Image (tube, rainbow, N blue to C red; front, side, top):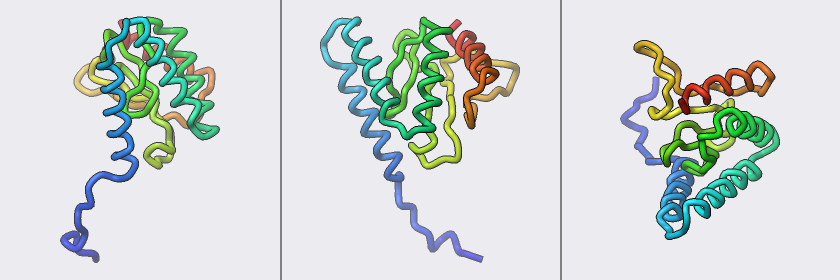
Length: 150
């Protein structure tokens, strides 16, 4: 039996530190003076660039998620959040795609913030594991983002 006192807290992982650096860059970009249209175009480019950087399986899922969200919830604006593709409503992130490789997890996920209007009683999911994007999964994502953006 190991003693937990022997294990020292080593702080954030390299992946967590990288995500925080990404977020700091995102905040600096959003603070720059430019028109709303220029900021939106840059945010879209950044989100698409993050998707393009992903490994094959994550990239394929992220591309499908992006297509479903933009087709079904046009009020959600593509952006980035902690270095991940995200979608915002009135400047507040509603949902994001987390690739499996980003934090070395078993599967990618689609997460929703508290801004998303997915409330259902006293307990509801705020993240969904994505093992594969099937037509049924696309339909469920469409349903969720429509509700989240309403």
